[in-house]
Image (cartoon, rainbow, N blue to C red; front, side):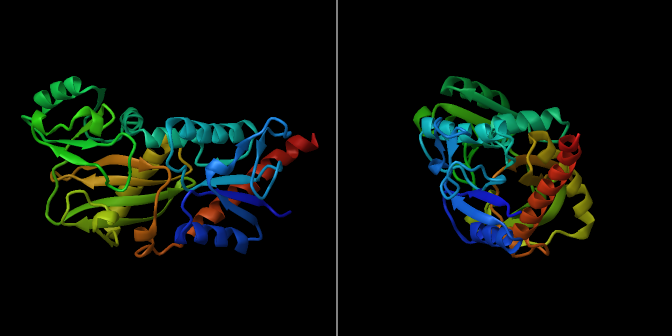
Length: 307
């Protein structure tokens, strides 16, 4: 049986192409389309209509990106992913996991509840409430202001005094503030650990002169020493489980005091930088694990159908 795989991707590129090739090498029929092109259509039996597949449901959906859009557009797209779950179509990652990771305040809430070390974090609406937090916290530690919805290190600022807080219109009147983790540097370093299907695929150090150690901001990927891998793996697996992600990029900071702090879980992670130092082919691993999941699901369902 030829499996139909839908890769949801708003910006096709080398990584998306590698994923499609990995599935096709395994005999799958692959469609790669933006989530915006999937239509709610109640005249169809499933209630959805898909480019390339029509009213036929895919066997699985892999989400690379949701795409930018208005609140209404993004809500509709996530609704499509929720609908696929209702139709028993496996979605990696699910709308639930994406929502948990895109909203950084929910991510840190779940990390803390899971007992993982993560910096003290505050998320409030309104400049006045943000100023109260800054006045209380800044005398002992700087704060990091991050966009609640954001990636690749964009929009991150260091807040040393309440006066450093930007006006409400620059942050949509929402302030996500986190204790700054003191690190050795420059150069500064952090870790990105890529998790898929409950196992660690590979990891890297990101090292750069900017305290925001992101590949898009000039950080250089390096191989993680063997002595660190077990500790990082345990934390990353627990972090991915906390947000219920099928695959994820987990960001971990090495504090100056020797502790490790989980600061982010990415449910739609990029891996171009990681692939340059990784031993595993990441796209190939994702395809292998998703198809393994489908095989196990079919095996589990077979006895129930027979009875």
